[in-house]
Image 1: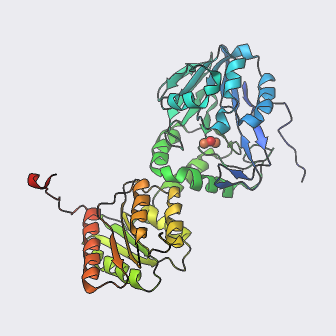
Image 2 (image 1 turned 135 degrees about the vertical axis):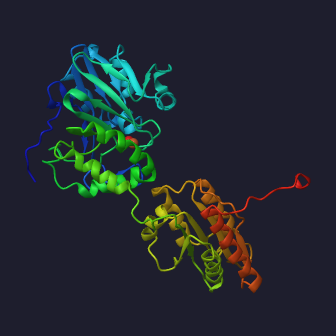
Length: 423
Ligand code: FEO
């Protein structure tokens, strides 16, 4: 395929008067950060902004692409003209060339978000000294001479340190990973490259989705700027309809499956080899259904694609996982679902575990550990039943459902511990 590239080896790309793209293309990348597939590679977008008092460099590139970055930077300015280095995000794909840039431009001041210095210290140990930096936040600005860089704190998009940089006179938002995607096309601009909608959504789902509350907070700030151009740290530069990308983020981050009103939701998932864990799960659901204001759903994971449940879990208030114990472990469909929960925000949701077992019954404890690791609330001790549950066992399951439902709906009675009970 041949098309007019706007990227040439060693040459920066002019974006506006005194503003250049000085990043790098990585068309060979096929897997990013272990978890992300990249169908045609990615880009590491870095930028240079010139003012009357000097040059600001915004972000760098992955270390393997440092030569490309420095060649483009040197075509834009001398190192002694660089007054400011802004890192919107310190992950190594953007900070890889930072130590060398600091060596080459020793007079430049490093400007980072307020959450970044602790991360920086661990990242640039090779410098041998603790790097000086100026933490900035909302309302702080750097005057470059005739143009001003302002900063927007956007934490957890997708690291604690992440921020955006705003060049008001050009209406340009340097957004870091936000609004980025892994899509490599040397035509750079969103109206010139191929169709990257899948990559945009895929990137959001895998990188930003677990932090959607922070996404909505950030959008409240960024939409108000009404940028003319959004310049993310990966993928196409968004000069055509930038608001549509913000609107897309808002749609993706806005809950859609809520049952409405004050109704809470509990999902009961189970896998059952001989029907015993299934009976326990049904009993838990029966108990929970007695709780006013709680909508309960029961799902057999045996033949299900767990991916379909991730959306439900994102909207749910509580979950119960039922698993038999096989070879001292919970069974694979349960682990598959639990491992998928890194994609969504489950912190603070309620959880419980149940399961029938033959010999040892480790599954319940392992599931509870996983839920606690995800920072879910596990207020009730899980229920383990050896082989066939008795009617008493099933009544305990109903009780667990009722109690968990009460926690979810906020009607659980506080347990008052007599001082005499304390060890
Ligand atoms: Fe592109 Fe979070 O680094």
